[in-house]
Length: 217
Image (cartoon, rainbow, N blue to C red; front, side, top):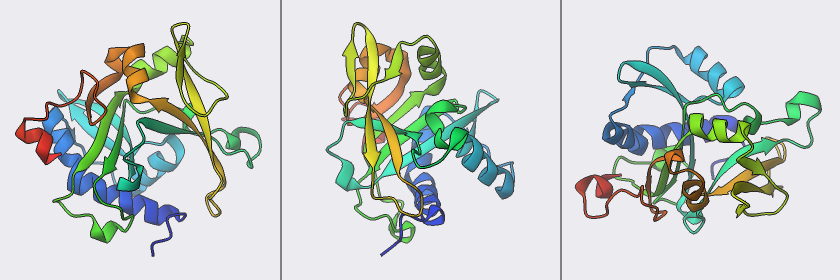
């Protein structure tokens, strides 16, 4: 069994999903992957800024953060952002929530229940998928239209989206993590421009189920 607490294994899983499945989404959106930067640059961007890939949009460089889950997570309707490492001290306790530097966030649940990168094939598909415009998200966070609360699930209260907080206590090598949790429908209700495209969450941004492209990705 693959040790998914290990960063390298998680990275290989994410890369396998990106190459075999996510690339179809970028093609659908008209985004071209920019692979001009070397591997060392990519690794530092991932670890420091949470940036996984670079894409070209109408000739302009844009950055993407990706997170993928296996099919056992298909019943959940939310996305997660790492919020805090409570066992770390000072600024090292703050995670990606406090440094939303990417332009887009792709979150997908694949139709395979394996985290072994070698088993992810081009025939695999997303059961659920959402692409978030993090520039809109960050602006709403700055204006306190999106905040993080203390309950487990997200809610809309007085016109504000209040994210939930979930603690992952199973991590050993990667430290315990606390995640900010946002229901995709709540994101759409807060601002429809937050969602570029989605599949399986049943918002008006859902790709039409009778299209060939929907079946491919």
